[in-house]
Image 1 (tube, protein in one colour):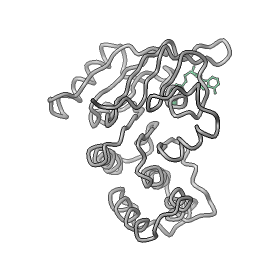
Image 2 (cartoon, helix red, strand yellow; image 1 turned 30 degrees about the vertical axis):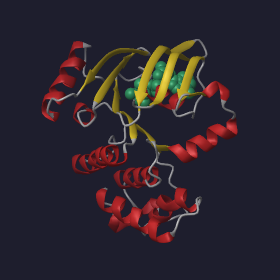
Image 3 (cartoon, helix red, strand yellow; image 1 turned 90 degrees about the vertical axis):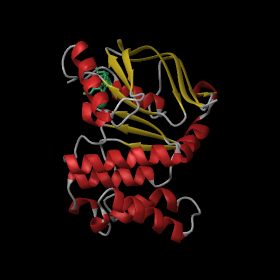
Image 4 (cartoon, helix red, strand yellow; image 1 turned 60 degrees about the horizontal axis):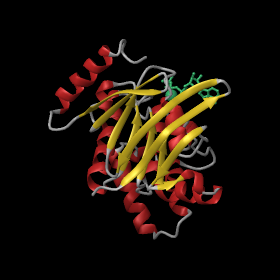
Length: 249
Ligand SMILES: Nc1ncnc2c1ncn2[C@@H]1O[C@H](COP(=O)(O)OP(=O)(O)OP(=O)(O)O)[C@@H](O)[C@H]1O
Ligand SMILES: [Mg+2]
């Protein structure tokens, strides 16, 4: 039996009178690599924020590793976030006073990890994401795409059990985007990392094994890669998008 990592039950989220998530029932099992797609404003980021405990939800329930968030206090949530989750969000949140390397290693410096292990992880991720050359620079000396990759390395260096990525390839050129997506696939395959990734891009989504489509705060469709090739899955995603009307934006 594969463990359930995330389960929502009739999950709702409202901002004032605006109901943004409507009765979402979603189950994610360990090791799944899932994309979330849908038009702008459909609730993708909101869903990521409540699942990752960054934002509160309004109704229903979320279970993380089979524990209801309603039963966890703030401290337990913070611990869970630190130990189990990695975040790749669009505001990079790199600290200006630290070099890229120091930023990436920051989550490990908080734990008692041997420096050889830290260096070895840094080397692997730096190579995989093509940022070895900028490790000694400061955030204000590098481009937006480089910041995005540095922030991704920081999110992945702890080998988190669950990675939440909100448009991680949005600011990247196609080569860097492919590097990041391949790194996510690698993590997913080698460490069984569970990944949830919001994207507007059918090509990026085709790296995932499952794509969920949101519209007006509801899950309206879902496709699985199954045995088909990445190219066929890509076509399938495009077809599903056009069936839903529009290209997602
Ligand atoms: N903090 C907030 N306060 C009030 N309303 C919000 C807040 N965050 C999001 N919303 C509203 O919730 C709805 C969904 O927003 P959300 O950011 O989840 O969409 P999205 O699918 O991520 O869109 P995009 O593709 O543009 O990033 C929108 O109508 C938005 O205006
Ligand atoms: Mg968004």
